[in-house]
Length: 311
Image (cartoon, rainbow, N blue to C red; front, side, top):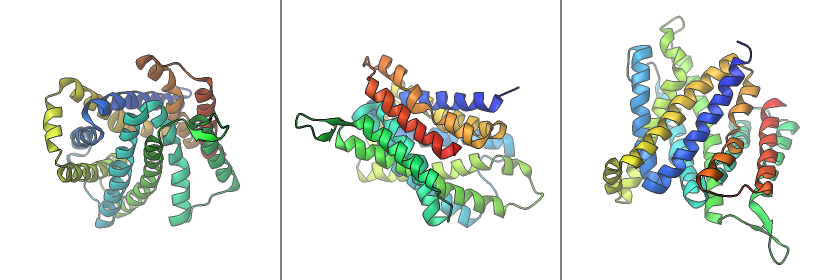
């Protein structure tokens, strides 16, 4: 089938848009920490079933201590820090703006890879980063009565948004290191099933770190009672389940398929369309008007993301 990979990549963007909307609803209803803890538990259950069916073991096998260490660290950075910031940004100003800040992930990943892995950053990459930042600035800044630029969004939410994008990008680079260690430790010519399911096994290890991290934070805040309350909240648990299914489970699965059937740059660009796709359903869900400036700013930002992958 022609353009199968591109079609799947668009499906990923739709899946992550659905995830963002349900995560927005769930964060407001259950709280960011509680929702994230439940999401980690549900992710582990879904991944365990998948690994059991595909590899014969419900837990990852064949990973050495280096792989476990890097992937656990990636889970702390990407899930505990990044997703905590992301879900809190949803609470402050909603998933529409929260997803806009997630476009900071490619630049953050690029800079981290450049600093710690020696990966090249061409002038085109720096230009793409500048375009991305310009689009975000165009969206969130406005002129006040004194004609000076000021934030039109709460500073707290902006900081959470920046933390979410940076956490996602840095966590991605760390997970890449961990998966490389994992793959190098597998015996050549050995069981191919775990090699095929390597990204899911890595996600499982990252989710373990997320589970422990969010559990400890809830303990320190004496907020475990919130989890017991959430478990009795049928609507809240529905949001948590759908957030998990369309995000870490279905979204990851489809993204792996997309890069198999399409050029990685094209697939990555299409999968990053969530900030554009979320504008209309978010506005309908929350009865908000669509601002032309927000649309233009989002499109500029997406152009920067596309430049990162396509140049």
